[in-house]
Every structure is written in C-alpha cells, then in structure tokens.
Length: 169
Image (cartoon, rainbow, N blue to C red):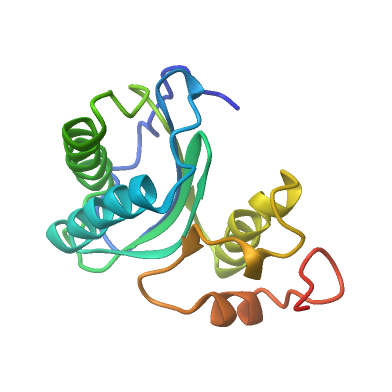
C-alpha cells in the first residue's frame, strides 16, 4: 500500500458535495486496531469530525494496521482536507492520551469518487477487506466495520453481495 506523500489534485479544491475513499495507516503499520477499546475510541473521534466538518461516513473498516473510510460531503462548504486533518488530529490525540503511543503515519491515501458505480465499488472493497485478509469468512462476522448512515446489511444489499465472498451463514 502506498504510504508516501500523496499529491492532491491540483485542479480540484476538495470542497462540496463529493465522495472520497480514504485510507489512514497506523505509525509504522503497527497492529493497533485489534480490540474494541482502540477501535471505539478512534471511531468516536471520526464521528466527531464527521459532525464538525459536515461529512457522512458511508462505510468504514478498521483493519489491524489501517482504516478505510468512504465519506461524503453533506454541504457546499464540506472540505475533505479539513475533515481528514480533523479526523486524524482528534483521533490521534485521544488515542495517545488513552494508550500512550502515537497513532497515525503522517500521510494517507485519498481518492475522489466521480460516480455511483465507483462509490459502490469502494464500499464493496471496504467490506471485503477483512475477508480478503483471511480474518473472517464473511463481512458480517467482522466487528470493526460499519457506517454512520447505513446498516452493514443495507450496504451489502446495495453492492449486491451474494454468492461470492459474502456468505450469510
């Protein structure tokens, strides 16, 4: 996974009603998201940034050493760069305070999504992540994924997950 300094699109201001696929890696790719204590604290701070910066977290998945987010600006002045900064700052501060160590690598990955199809493809990728990594047999079994807007079942239905990697039983 690319974790160097990414370039922002030079002709795009990252403000408005846009959707983004974000990935943040833990410092030195340490497996810090193994327990609900650590995941819940970071998720709470993401939701705080979501509210403060007028975003919606459409889907998320906390893997042991990184997190994937599918986010959407909810107003004309929603600024993705501010959301990223706020989410990482709030969660990094609270994580270090609670667990005594730094959380994030400096840079992350972001991709601006331009269509509904791209959004559904990213949602599927996010939910498949723990299955591809061999952590669970079905996305429904994984405790560290979800959305602030939809149930996991609604997301699975939207991306028409059946007969492939998703097995309900």
